[in-house]
Image 1: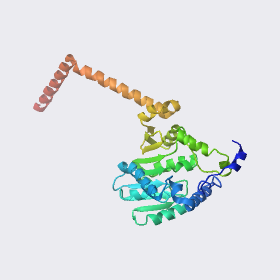
Image 2: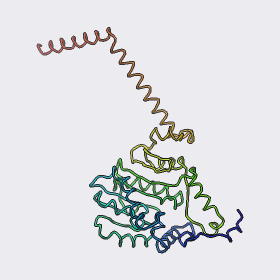
Image 3: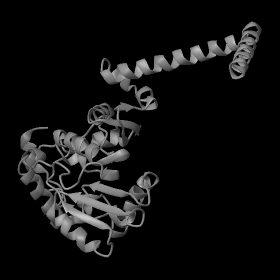
Image 4: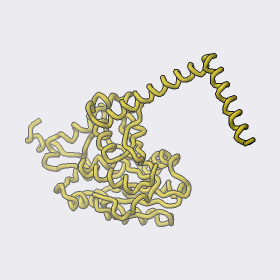
Length: 309
């Protein structure tokens, strides 16, 4: 492709023709405010109708239900106009949504004003400052991190770890550039048009996400091929063994302390298993069993003699 090819093609919809004016937070805020004005529904989710937009939030809400206690608190990062929030209102005590766009928050408040336990916040696009430490049981972020610089995503991971309660769950998703359909989307944004009209879109690999998430302190307990991540706040960061082995992450991150610790843990578990088997064989030995019976008998005799004295 040549840069001059940009003169021969442009996206069909006004929403797709929006461009990011700069990399600062004010530019991102302006971009999403404008997106809300042009088409709030399709700027949040790629749905064919208002009805499918409403129903699509049910799937995401149901995915976090198992981890959300009835008296718990939930937060969504990048909530838009409340596609997911509206379905969580009946599942827990408190539902909070944060978005960089004041226009999205305004429209969301209008849509969800009939739900008294839903609270919307205008965020700054970088942190979770409105919320205190260990505030939420579940934090969710769907198809939002792909629109942010990776450095900002990392800070949101740090902030999410801060606001989650111990053993709290963070579920999020980003596009996987190693999948053919997502790579096709990536090549779309490689077209010359987007050099002059930049669109905030970023793609990931599983290894990148594991690195960012664990370095933020999380234990990654689920990672799908679509890079849907379920991470938990624990005292020690890490990765479930099924992920590390199934996705060959240990090979791709060879030498990383995380995986050296994981290998050491596996070795210790195996050593413990062998020691338990050896102990069981010893205890089954007739000579050893007789010795144990004699020892127990002597202890009983000594205990009786002390009571007599």
